[in-house]
Image 1: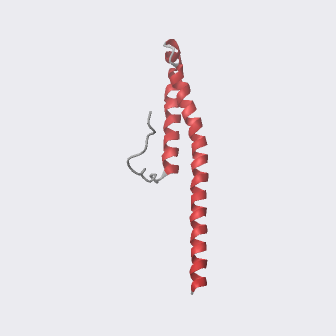
Image 2: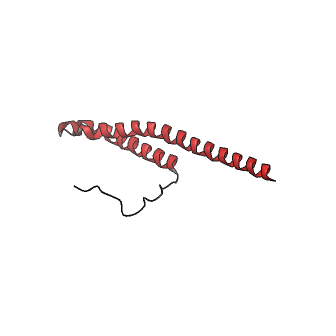
Length: 95
C-alpha cells in the first residue's frame, strides 16, 4: 500500500467569534435539557433517557469549552501584543 500524500495545501483555520459560538451552543444544549426534563417519564417509558442526559452532557462539556476558548483567545491576544511590542522596539532601535 502506497503512502498517501496530499495533493494541495491545507487551508488556514477559520477564526471568528469562537467564544460566542461555544457559548451559544452551550446555552442551546442546556435549553434542550430543560425542555426535555418535564417529559422525563415519556422518555423513560420508551427507553430514550439517553437523549435527556446527552443534552446535559453537552451543556457540561460546553462549560469546559467556554473556559478553554476564553483562555485560548486571551493567549492569542497576549501573543499578538507581545509581537507588536517587539516590533515597535525593533523599529525604534532602527531609527
